[in-house]
Amino acid sequence: MKISASIYSNKIKGVEALVKELDDLKVDFLHIDCNDDLSVFDDIAIINKMSQTPVDLHIISSDPEKYFPFLIKHQVDFVTFQHENLVTPLHLPKEIKSRIGIAIVTETPISVLEQYKERMDFVLFMTTTPGKSGGLFNKENFKKIRDFKVAFPDKKIHVDGGVNDEVSFVLRNMGVYSVVSGSYLVNSNVIGHALHNLRNDNIQSHILVSDFMLTREELPVVSAEDAKLIDALICIEKYCLGFTLMLNKEGELVGLISNADVRKGLIRKIDSLSQMKIEDVINPNPLKILNTFTISEMLTFIKNSKIPIMYLPIVDAENRLTGAITFNNLIKGE
Image 1 (cartoon, one colour):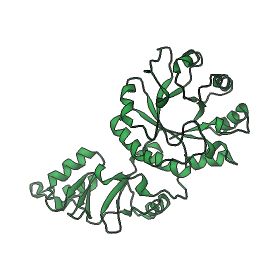
Image 2 (cartoon, rainbow, N blue to C red):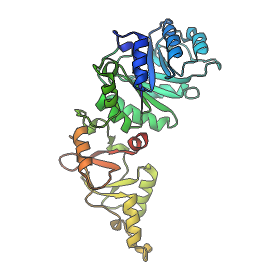
Image 3 (tube, rainbow, N blue to C red):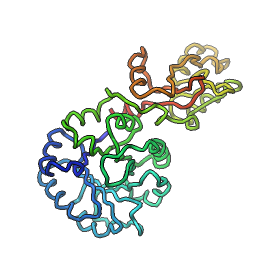
Image 4 (tube, one colour):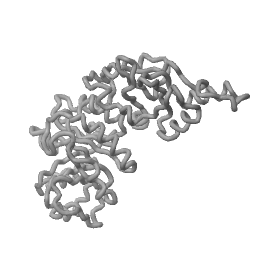
């Protein structure tokens, strides 16, 4: 996952000094918030002369057209327009070669992005108040990110607002492409240490797994009472997660069927495949965690496990399924 350093969050160091420090630390992008102020291009000109690090510009303006000549001149790498400030349709000239993003706040539904999908390369989820530094991450956005990935699977996801080390871990696990970090990163006593924490999983967390897990409604599930082997196989294929979960009528988790379980069942029944039943592929005691676990507790559980873990069902105190976490995106990102 890429880290974009919000340089205007630091009010003490000058642009040149801060950019040099961030370059030495090999930050991925330099984020600039533009609250309807053309003078930001003076700083962009300075940055382009001294740095090869891509500039990540966020424009908050009801008159985006006045920025077009400057975007053409400076050819900024990433340009994001704040949807809520646009009063007319956004028509970008072809001379602008930047990768284009649309930013939305937490209250704005992702359906508004449909109108931009032909020109939009990525979305920027504003998880605190746009243009203001130091806010807390709004956890409602975890669900919005999952919904966006389903609705726009070919578009990248950027996140800006309240990103610290624990939020960064969750977003990496969700397959987010880039995060903007302001106060946490550039106002840290040691910027290099903060940057390391944003890329590391050795964290102390207060975020619960229930805050960002796939919910029960988003998961592949079959009935323990009447599901057949073909039902389980179709469910695994449909959801593309590599497993399906088996529940009884009370909603309790009574088993898991993974691709590996199917393979093992085939090996055992290779001489009598026509007699193979769902009971031959069920793992009746899958690894699982409680929905009250924090990220830190989950990571400790994983590190203490004797087998590699690609996903974890999540249950309540009565063993009722509440969700699951998968680690495919985190593994790919790392």
